[in-house]
Length: 57
Image 1 (cartoon, rainbow, N blue to C red):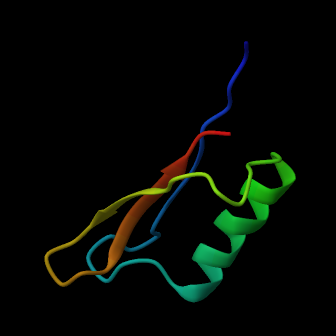
Image 2: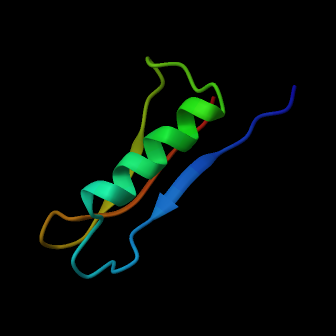
Image 3: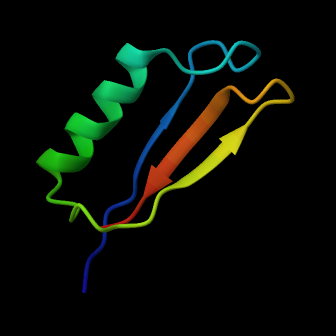
């Protein structure tokens, strides 16, 4: 079985991901056929901004 990890990192980890960056991640996950019920793993900064998000199909 081959799996592909879909992940994205914030361009500016100090401030966190933008809505556009998050939308691009979701679009990539959909193209990779990640099911809607897949669990997402998120790393946040001290202020609660998203630094990195990833999931596996």
